[in-house]
Image (cartoon, rainbow, N blue to C red; front, top):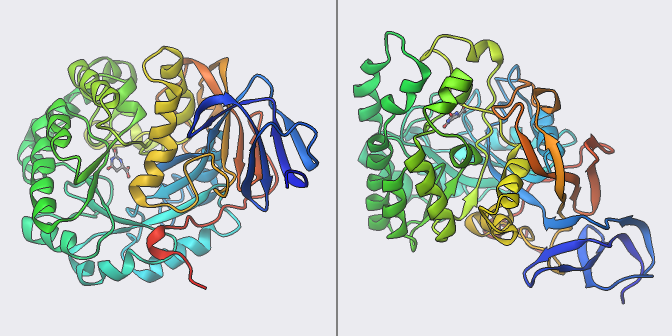
Length: 446
Ligand code: DOR
């Protein structure tokens, strides 16, 4: 049966597992019901998307949405509104809120706060800390939990798993892929003297140097190998780590961010000052080129934004008192589509990194591809639209982007989540209806 759809998308190109081709998409009860030539089929709503391209919904699997405790920077409503405006259909949120997300109650609290306020689908990471290691195996299976997140080096907030025994303990507790921020805490402390009395922001990648990242990634892989545990190395920034990770692909998946692929030192620090400050840092051109090579060679599995909003006032503090992090959830799609337009990656590879990749890495159910039976999550884009990114467009509470003034080719035109149009032509539509993501490990029974 091909008629009686709730929503019918016609006239567009679609990126399906078969490739990029003209295809109409029929949606019923929030799921993809048919793909093909569906002209004339009955539907409650028909959207003519001629000239546009339909991608599987873009999943941003690394965002910091700051609720609870830091709502002056961002909250679940504003952060997910920014996501939807940027063409993102689902987010995985990091645990360095206040309090940190360390317990079943904290996950339940975030899910309750997201209900009726989140514009996109969502899941929350449980933070690993010495005190919750014995509970991690149970916590990672909670519905709505994206998995366990480890900070090996101090960044924003107090979450830290320092020392081999603690990290080995985390890796031994549970079986889902563990997401890890790799910077070596001892070396960070030792080198802080370089900037402690004040320095130019371009010293950030000197303090938190390439060796700091490499040492942590090397230790993580050694301990993960010993434990037989799969890991996901977040925001990888160096050529050396990419070489090591390429030799450990049976164990490790790899994320890069649009910032590390787009900005480079020292230029970004001279132009943007502390707005370009994040952890791990944006580095020099040779590392940026190595990240692109790793994208080309398939070493990278996921692009995540590491959306980490801080207010302009906070960012205006003298370095290094200024906090690390940039907004990114809203700019991920246009910035990366601009790379597609420039020929640096194919549209299919973009989809692999932003839809299939996150779904595969974390074991999401029903997400990540345009296929019958999957959730009807679509990022509709105009690959030819020329736009300028500006602070004014940014819906994040902190109201700024490192890409202000950047001209891009490629723009999100609509965000569709489980068959509901959530954003069209830069405007949010309807009410927030985001739902928790489902994972293979914790699917409801019965
Ligand atoms: O730059 C960063 N900011 N890196 C992180 O790991 C944390 C993030 C934040 O939460 O601000």
